[in-house]
Length: 539
Image 1 (tube, rainbow, N blue to C red):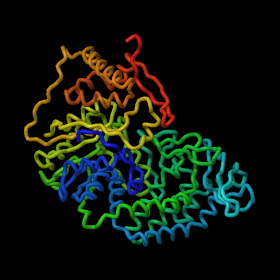
Image 2: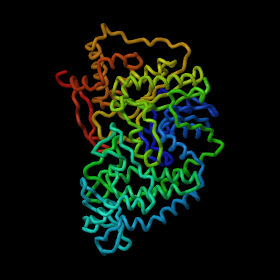
Image 3: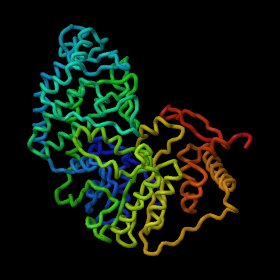
Image 4: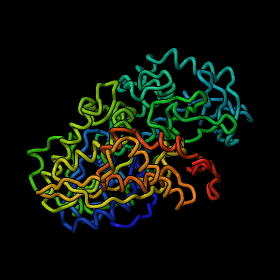
């Protein structure tokens, strides 16, 4: 794959549930097509939301997916599961119908026009104070109002009588899990702190009704529907007091409640999920004969006895990037409500709060790559996607792979179809897209040649990097941070220089700020600011 591919937007079956860092399906498909054949076996040791698995099955490959995160296993399994959608729809509508009276009690308000009873769609909060209500009236339609005394009394009643209401509605499944420190923000200590009291009650009622469904496959898809709405009915959604709506979705990988936030009607949000779920399931429509797949909710560090030596034809994977995305921490929002137990001790991540330093990350990543080499057939290929600004993490990943029987075949950089939430918030420093490294399994690992620089001191390295960066900026008449990484990383990796870079630098920031100038320009298409590095006049 010696050319860049244009990422396409995800089809509907990848939009059933939120997951982080989901890579473009068409690019993964192209790699699977290139490095494997029909009826061969494709393996992903960090399967995430299952894109590699699903694309492999579409291409008539056998697929093996492993992930320690129970949410990952659940999303992939239910997405692939054969489900009678007519039965599912019947169960869904039954839950909706049986919840209507409860909804009218806990989301009740007075219409701003006719003064009759109406439903709250959204409440905008400022801290602990409700500020604005967007309501739905059967006679008058949508309206906006400030909360009146009855609205505030209802909120107070729900908060004061929380336990009694849980007993009344037979709610037994409200999570009590503490948020791990790495993702904890805004004073929220427990998962339930991320929701209003009213929404905790509503979610508990929905979950109790779903748990009573006896048909297992339908219950699975109902739970996926339930889990998928959790971020949007949490207090982590910024609020727009003028329109009475939530602004964007959950865009950062932390449990953060903005001061002005939205409380959405849980039952209304659940009803709105039905078409999305049905469309996604109908779109995939894989035949049972094409579903030659094995999914496991375990660690890939030791899969002896599960996968045989030399049994896999191709590996495509997107490993955890140090501390970039705390997958288990973010998944707490879903796993806790679904009742899944997470093995935090064996997560591969850098998290000093849990004593998981870069050495622990290195040991665990090396164990996985050793297993990948064992199960992959000789002279076959493994593609690893990666995006991190920290040279130390780059070094660990590359050493874990090249130290366990692989040699680098080539590197490509592919842009994403959409900008992630983190990239949108950090326009100056975020790297867009990902590097795709393809390695070959070989019996004899040749030592990689290192670029020869006299003495190879920090000064030598700095001078060399300044030269490379300036060439990129000259060629492009100003370069974004993504373009700088996109051009320099392959040079550094191919010359085995990432270790030396990690010894002296965390990233390119110091060199850029000391020797170049950051210029802000407005993108003509998006109208958003775009930041490019230029050459200082006094260079």
